[in-house]
Length: 108
Length: 119
Image 1: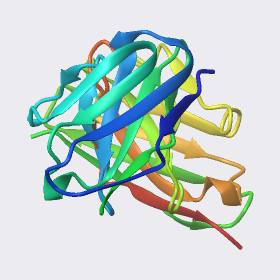
Image 2: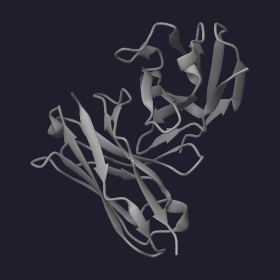
Image 3: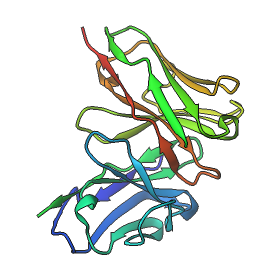
Image 4: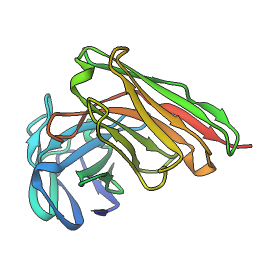
């Protein structure tokens, strides 16, 4: 089973700053099968990025994804107040899906 | 509008059983694979189970294999999770989530239903 490790655990930033979140896989992941989600307290997760770099419907272009193999990155170019939340990466394996442990982006 | 509405959660004793349901609307349910994902209080997301559109392919997380059974009724636009031999560590909010075509992410989620396993 592929393990996804997200770092940092918590990112303290101010609105307007750039956020860079990392997701590292224990073995190579097909870029086609790597997704990112945002979750706010009391809400279900929301799909942000699929296929490592494609934005889901309605997602602002300040969100971008990149990476391949074992290293993937979610970048938020300029943080808006509504972007402070927890972010998860997720991959599709041959017979299972796995999520990373999450990165919390908090207001500094 | 795509909607997924879970139900069936509640308080159950260790060793007990519970059946969760997810009612789907606003899309052609029979064309999509579906998943159950859970989240323990204050913890991260954990994938639980996957079922293909025709029920021909089913997967489970190791943590629930042999205890949980996923199923669907395409005629009723419904997804189910039968949970047996429940343990305290199964306590979580359980979400159903639609699998976008070609494994392109879980694009729609329900609001979740809370399962609490406690004596």
